[in-house]
Amino acid sequence: LLENTPEESINHRSKAGKKVKQPVVHYEKISKTYGDLQVLKEIDLDIAPGEKVALIGPSGSGKTTLARLLMTLEEPTSGTIQVDGELLWHQMVNGKLVKANEKHLHKIRNKIGMVFQHFNLFPHMTILRNVTAAPIHVLGMTRDDAEKQAVTMLEKVGLGDKLDAYPAQLSGGQKQRVAIARALVMRPKIMLFDEPTSALDPELVGEVLEVIKEIAHEGEMAMLLITHEMDFARDVADRVVFFDEGHIIEQGPPREIFHNPQSARLQNFLSRFR
Ligand code: ADP
Image (cartoon, rainbow, N blue to C red; front, side):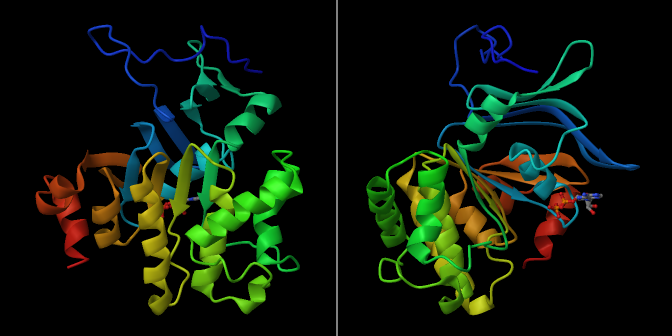
């Protein structure tokens, strides 16, 4: 199993040899196959600290799989993944694929916050307890400290008045905002949002996107956002990555991607939203 020795970490230097900022996420030649289906085809993608990256593309193009690899919910077929300088998967020169050991996996998972389509709150716990559970049990924070942090985050997502409520008493939009607070309280280096509004009633979508926008504009955390909300992607992302059939077809600043798409595939994809 992998020990992250300095020799093994990937050295991020520009061609001139100048040291460049280490990305918070580094995917290198990542492929993923399910049976005969190649879902990801040698994907290279780096996310810089604080960078907001929106992944767009048709259903089934591999976006969720890319995010799930980062959370170690899936294993790549080949390639290397590094999170904030820690090797998660490493493809050796001889082709062998090596996974980080448990200690590193634990460290890596704590750097990543996740918000999915479904919020998976604990139904028998209050909102406050839902948010304090991980800091207490995973980070070893005292209950007092965890509650202070949790209240701060719940206020940030506009739920400071719901601390003692139970999930069943909240709307879908409120539940999703709790899920966001629960991820934020762990102070991740990167937040993954996988279609965070696609399970919500249309009238609840706006409040969740607003909260994500506010967090994005605060700045320091990197974000990987999988979304079908093109206006949202344009407002929030520093870079938009268009995925199709397991490839990155085009990427760039939102202005270029949305106003001057180069490939026929991206033009066609965007035309569905007009
Ligand atoms: P997207 O997020 O872009 O909609 P996904 O990453 O969810 O795409 O899926 C990409 C492809 O991989 C789809 O064709 C999907 O059916 C397939 N797929 C995803 N997970 C599995 C799995 N566990 N087993 C088999 N096929 C899968």
